[in-house]
Image (cartoon, rainbow, N blue to C red; front, side, top):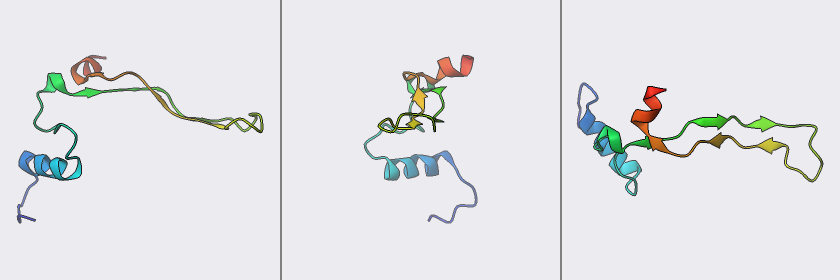
Length: 73
């Protein structure tokens, strides 16, 4: 919208603010304050499940932790 030739951090900050106004802006937070989670178990489909049981098992995520901890793994 501002006819920039390259994408900058300012553009990312502005876009995040527009798309997620209720969430702290990840592009302005210090790294130690950014949290994330990992996939602990991916979703599954169990065709042999009982008729009254949902054959889809949702993806399970770990608790959120500082991103610096995830990057050390």
